Amino acid sequence: MKLPKGFTFVMGGPQRLAGLLLLVFLLECFWVIGKQTVDGEDYRYARCGREMWERPSPLAGYFTTCGNLNGDGTFAYRVAAFPLTVQRVVMLAGDKFRKPENRLYSGGALSGSSWEMRHEVGYTKWLMHVPFALFAAWLGGGLWWVSRRLFGNEGGALALALYVFSPTVIRFSVRPNNEVLAMWGLYGLVYTAMGVAHALQGPRRKWRPRIVLLTVSLGLTAAAHLLAAMVGFVASIVFMFYLAEWRRSVVPLIITWAAVGAGVIELAFFSFRLAPFSYVFTGGAGRFWFGTAGVVAFVHDERNWPALVAVAIAAALYVGVKRSRYFGNTAPLLMVAGLACLQATQVFTAAWLWALPFLFTFVGGVFADALETKQRKMFLATAGLVVGTQALVCLGVLGSLARR
Image 1 (cartoon, helix red, strand yellow):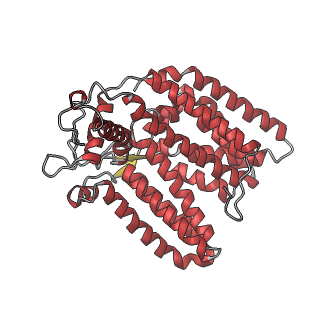
Image 2 (cartoon, rainbow, N blue to C red; image 1 turned 90 degrees about the vertical axis):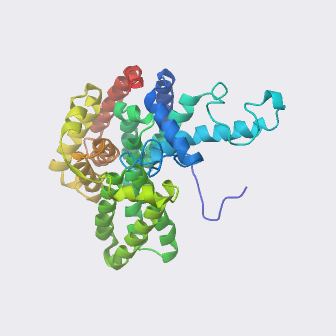
Image 3 (cartoon, rainbow, N blue to C red; image 1 turned 180 degrees about the vertical axis):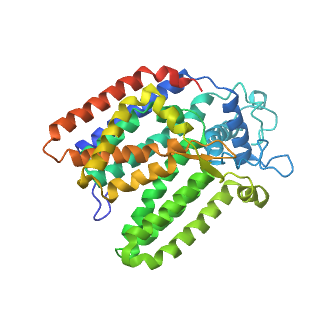
């Protein structure tokens, strides 16, 4: 098959290293998942997620038997239950080719219940947990791509390595939850907005794909966590106005269309049912205040200390070295500052987790600048020591991450 004209893809050393790191990350997640057991929380995601895909709730006024799910979003429920629904449909379709006496249930139609199939359905834990690890790996690839484009191969590799060997990231990547999906969506949303702003300086034919991607990013982030979408929406407006320069007059129109499109995507996650969808605006998921509990817990966790050493060095360099203070480093630092102490008041949230990809991007950028100085060898050795220590710590505590 011929590649499109002008398209080139080179699988060089940086790409191989990134692929190897992402493979290591997936192996870490799979090892942890293999040690887990299915618990009541998993069954809740499976039950209510399957209700979204397969049938409306029998309870009047509610989207599922779990309620209207505004508090923790619908995205994680659909992601967790989608493989189970596909497996069930495939098994029931195959059941039509069996002899009547060997069928899972009487009738052979695609309406059999999972209760009737309880002895046939397998790999439930893997089907529910692996998709979240894949989303986290997807985010890791995006983190490397952004950091490499901004800071070069070394900055991208360092940012990805810190992400891959973060016990906190792995802990949230191996079980159904909306936090890892909000982290994935928010990072993509912010840097997609920057990409749209840069595209505005070029020909109009390049605008539409990025605007569509911005809309999808905002909609999926809102489906995971409304507060994350609100933060990403505001950050996108600020960064787009800053970067668009003489095209700033177009930004309000783009933002408006993105917001409308995101609303349609959110409505689709509620199966286009207006009654439960209206609860998004009245359920209080967007109410927030500020607190340091999440940050304090992250800092006090000894498993994060090697990475925090790199953060401390990067912060000192950013303050003390003028060449480190430019937009590429400042933007992720601003996102960390805005997210780290953010707390929703009505629902569970881990905004400090959403800040981690931006934090690792910041560290990669500052170290990339330091590696261009006369002290390159010292900073290269420091980065290698930090990554090596963090990797050893992470691999040593994988067993403890299997517990919820």
